Image 1 (tube, helix red, strand yellow):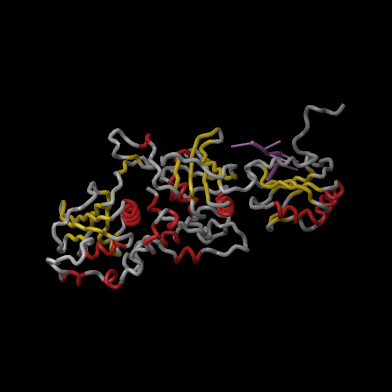
Image 2: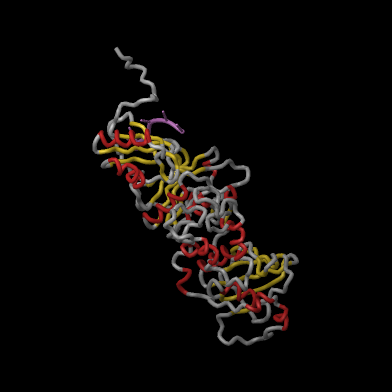
Length: 455
DNA sequence: AGCACA
């Protein structure tokens, strides 16, 4: 009697099967490539790729056993090994007689990705980081995160299957770039499949779930403290209640910052209604009033931490004011109500205007406020719909997106001439990332995102 | 470089 109990896991000779087991495949291998590989020997009726922990194994099932034998026999005596994408592929008969294609939801493409974040510190990955990473491929509609037996997981919803696929292809198996994670965090890799979901239900904006299509969605009650005034941000930081009035303090004021300069900078995001400047704690502060909260939010997001002039001069720190309507008693060089037509100028533009740095002087803001540009959803305008070269795995057919990445600048930003360090400066940072421009399959390159959005 | 499936 042959031993039934101890079937060795691997044998030098497998009994023939219509199903062939392939290993050492590149992980990008597609079913099409498997079919190409088997076609010369017969009719491939089924395939399965991305098998195994490393996703580098596959199965090919032929219509007829003789076809499988032909393929094995050919490569057994061939001087040229079977290859996929230049990689030698090892073949043998499978120990199964047919491919069971559990075409699970994970295999059928959809617009929602199921992302498993792997690593000891996986659950420390901020939802904003995920947003940033996935935004590199298109507008992210919603993200939910949750804890499952598989670990820390997220569902990431894109507009369409194509965008989701490009993100999946580029990110699956890669690690979250280190610079997006706190320094002491261990690496986190992403495992991505498709979800059966098509539209996630997000009830609240919270540290666990976000709906980027709906800025009006309430912040989760759990994220609002007892005062009801301050929400808790995604990073756990306290948030001031949003306001249509911004409080800007200016540090490192190497150049005079005039009312007109502020007006110019802040008008790039929408009409400025009023500005009031004053000295506080030895520094200059200003209140800038917009007609609506949304515009103020966009302006704050775009400008916070940035400098008016190149070189870190006149760096802006912006918070929400408790004011909602400034009382401008008089129009002068420190306060202005732009809503009043033909204001009586008590002190028409002073001569200090002439001291403005060249950058600011030379740049008339070409697109001041383009009504619809900021509504309804600010997020989509900061998105870059092409993945950067480093993440892209689109293969030779796909266009290279590098130029796109280089010449876009933040749609919210005033033109580069007026705030030079804000557009180009960020791009430079991206260029310095390791892995950029390397082989597409290497992780670690930078999504076209703004690092300063992270916190 | 060695057999999958939520």
